[in-house]
Length: 183
Image (tube, rainbow, N blue to C red; front, side):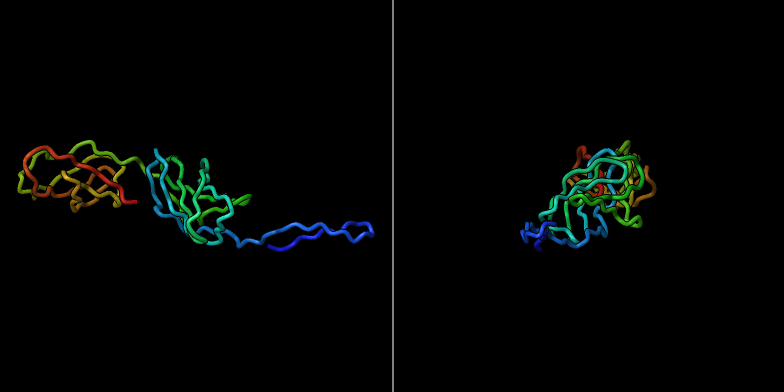
């Protein structure tokens, strides 16, 4: 903090003193995760420099609203990117009265929400080892597949609507097939 003095134009030498603070410039380097579903807020960590605890921060995008961000350190904040249209958006940060945008080379991408439509075949031996085809939408290389008791199984991303994997060994009975996006 530095003192700011204003001297009256009259010949009296009366001084009015107030405090003023110089802050480092705020910069955004990248956001993790850099992808999220288009239909929901995505919790992100914003990495950059010049973050000061006393400054109110808000995270948003060039296409939508802003929400409060939490100060973690001088180089990271936590906030959420609002839902938006499928595609890339620039993450923006309101730091007090300043608006700072993420470098265009490190944009955030909204993706289709992930969901499963069908698994083929729908039955397999308890010994496992059966090739499965999972049909759905919103798949990406960041999607993992779990069958049954939450065990992730090796899977191969083929397209945004197709994943293949091999069934694990399991006791007899119905098992849920779940997808999880690792943003």
